[in-house]
Length: 521
Image 1 (cartoon, rainbow, N blue to C red):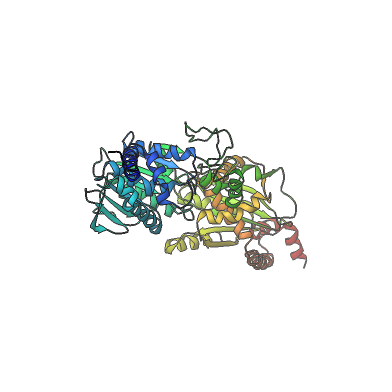
Image 2: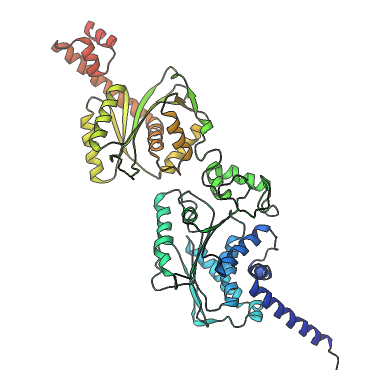
């Protein structure tokens, strides 16, 4: 008996379902393409990078390698691939597979976890893989189990993972972009990934790790993954032939966008203007230090042969350390930056002292430098928190008796403090006196915040802060009071008649002409 139209359609549908079932199981890329309409209402826009990410994740699932790091710009569908579709796809051929997935924000983790769960429960998925079912008594927003013994647990850095194991652990954006400039935030994410969660694999010999994120700092989780040898796929928004982590299969030419259909060149350039050079280099180009420099660009610093005349105020700001170098160690430096403020609003750095010394050596350096600078240069000291910091400042201030000393606790992150100086540098308002210290200073400024040391940056930003931000009036007042005190002291020494004028000038920091004028008065 011939088949009627309904029977033909049913048979065609059954054949299609069986074909898609097998094709979807075999290929994550084809699964993702078929699943798109069930995870996102927007029309699918193809891009070669989507296939590249799918291929890398499939290789991880098949255990071609066991550690993967993917670095992709924002808004390029990475979370839909990693956190929504990938666990669902693995369950099509291994419903007993167990996952832990993590994100810096619990809300984002739950959002993608719910999308993935809805995908598995959809009629489309259930028609093709009906063996994948969730247990009714273990089906919550942050934890759900399959009837075959698989599960997915959603977590965040800082949250506990005790009692949960996994065959595959995925980290999707482990850093908050707004907080990744702070070492505390980066350290929390690194400790979570490399210490807390790394022990949660069911089998240390066969389990797998996958990290996907935009680059935010040289010391972010992705950077450490690369240095530990993870298989890497790095896809910058604009192609760079000399990218340090270039993807060998990237088919683009120099300057070509990653996904021109969704993120054309003009959109990326708008991001460049909005983010600034440093953030663009990390978030869009996946190289946390920009080609031309990060927050500070070398070309923006102006080096002169002489100090412009008319400096209004001088400060010597110190960033203190107190550890002598030992074999294999790399301690911080004690740095003193002497900066002056010019009448036209520009600034000049005339001297940078950079030494590794013992605590006693630091004290000797501060006193010797103060004697060379003279009393006309305000000494700025950073105050460490707590009673120990206060005690140190009291001791140093006592030692520097006869010089004007200003101490202040550091507030905000190093990056936030440096951002205040950056516009002055970019505008060409910071001059450097040509000297031997220039090169080391410029290298550290250019590499900040990814350099091994940032003592010179801290000292320079502290000096600038002392000369600006409504503190100039305070400094002028203190300087006037200090000068009055030195004039009074000079009169007393003249009256005692025990010192010659040059000796009085050295003792008070006044000019010899001023001492002679006081004697005549």
